[in-house]
Length: 246
Image (tube, rainbow, N blue to C red):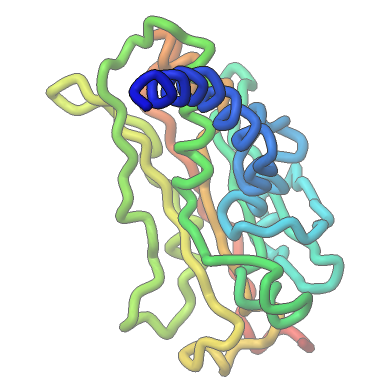
């Protein structure tokens, strides 16, 4: 009896790693996880997938003109989302601004399991950071922190949030302890939120994010770029809700 028990234990010791390996291989990949660093020209498409946890196909408009981006709206038709790239003085991309659809609006239009739960802008930044870190074995910063107080929408907020989101802010900085900080600004206006029902449909069901560019983040971690990026701008004129036909 004792010998049989030893034989069984030995067999399990051999088979268990194989069983676990097969089980892991059988699990489908996470559709909301980045398998590789996203391309700049389609960055907000990947951000939409990660932040709102959706695989609904989207159309992307990349704007060269800031004021055209300001006037744009993420719409359920398409659905269509919008992107604007921020550059340093040398012409290298430092960040992206994304106007995306909210999970609740996608669920209304495409079915209850089409998206969600709603995530955060930093969900994208942190996934990108992990992928960048794989390429840099000896990063210049031992400590990197993500400012999680990113959301501009609060329970008390019932007015326009867009102007605050657009205003310039410091996206990267180093504190006295030597920790690299990566900041962002984002907000969600759920399509069904009663606070915003006075707004036209095209102004609701949105999730806006400012995101760090992988190439700039990689340069920071290599010690080849300054942590002083400022993202955002002052539009010439903001469109008001009553100026639309929708």
